[in-house]
Amino acid sequence: MAARAYLLNLPLKHFGTPDANAFRVALEKATNELNVALPKKGRHWGLARKGLNIFLRDCLYTVYLREAFSLQLAEEFFEVPLDSISGKSLHEQSSGRLPRWKTVRGLTPSLSDQYQMEASRLAATKKIPRVHLDAIWWGERPGS
Image (cartoon, rainbow, N blue to C red):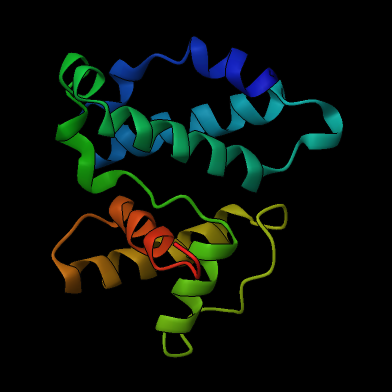
């Protein structure tokens, strides 16, 4: 409930920018604000970032929001939401460049940056923005 309440009022206009630095500033600010909005026991930077990245990705995928807030301008800056599926997939495909995935609750900003850099590298080989890797991995889950 706390995350939904925060995201309901998130100004998406700050994410519709062709400026990588402006996008990063908006992402960091929103992550920190969302983390503070969470109940004390649920305050983990990694959980806040994952929730924010899922929300932003879904906004990007919603044509009305994408167009209203020019989110397509920043598509290349959107992060892949990190969780056990994406974290393990990145680790496996990193050829030892990443530490083993542990938990989203244990995710730190510096570790997230490492994983996002690897996601960018991998996405470039597929000629897609890194935000879309998650859709590929979810489709590859056993039983999908």
